[in-house]
Image (cartoon, rainbow, N blue to C red; front, side, top):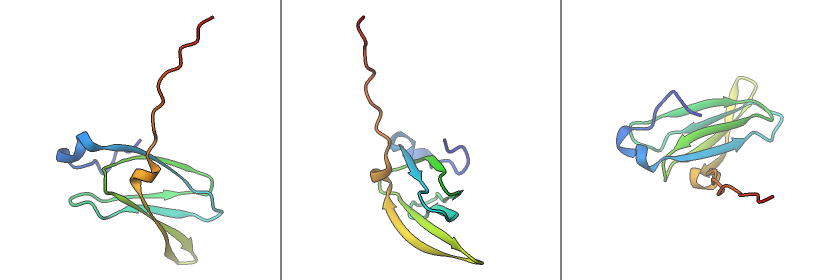
Length: 93
């Protein structure tokens, strides 16, 4: 879970738990830059799952690494990456 680059206080009650998996064979950089007073950036290695918190309206930019550069390859609304908690299942024996 994200512990650095905390979500601004006034938006904490609206936070979403999100998950992104780098399904490529390249190193990626995940960034959120469209939220005022907040900047999020993490390196995501091939096959790695990134769990993070965001706010509604945030967009995750995926930059794929090349030799000495990176290319913006995708922009994903964080609502689409939201982890939905399932209700606990009660097992009766």
